Length: 310
Image 1 (tube, one colour):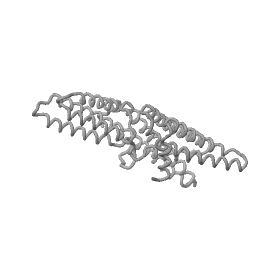
Image 2 (cartoon, helix red, strand yellow):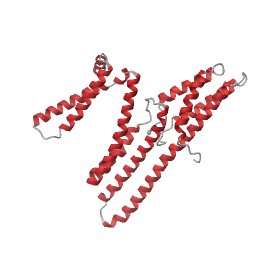
Image 3 (tube, helix red, strand yellow):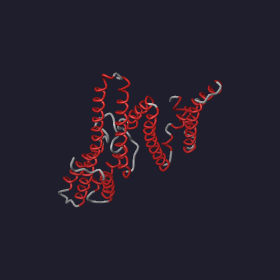
Image 4 (spheres, helix red, strand yellow):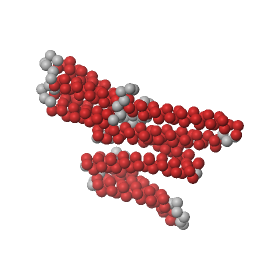
């Protein structure tokens, strides 16, 4: 056992809510001390603040690591919601700040626009997002990821086109700069439309496949003894197709980047419900009703983005 593991074992004796509050206070202290360092003051005071800032950061990491595992489900859900809201507001404020700074200082604005474009990659991650969500939040999840990807594309394109005149400022290169700028904006527009149409296509397919699986489960409840095995195989096949759709990334088809439509924990839960419904039917219909309700929520969450012309 490492020193950090032993320390975590000792901290496990602290009540989770107190530990969470302590981690929050440590984080706020770190933020405030970082702001205070910029204020003019004697060197001794500044050195003390830097040491305090580092200690508060260490306390935040130690106290915050793994604390959510000990929280009650309701507290954990509220914390997850707060984290999502904070992330959304922070990203939108960063994008707005970049636009405002751009009117004051072009260089600083370009740097912030680049940060907005890069931050989207770290926020979406590599697709292995495991925290469960409510199916009623899926529509918001898809809308948010599509909007953030479009913001990132626009920010990156603007940053590139604002840097270009700084690097190629000769008058003889202005025509080439203009052509390049127009080309990148057209490409960015096409990329934005591609992200939007991809989300519509995925939602259309999920809605259709969820309803097909519901129909397969309904047919299973009325199957005769001779039809049970074949209809169970049909239901399993329809679930496999739905599961593949839910593993897709919302914003991009790249396998190492993007946000999965439904986190793995949600897919495992839904898989268990569908599997229990298939096994239990046609003798009982309790699990079928539960699986049917979840699948209907899934279909409804994607219904607003249906586009059958794709």
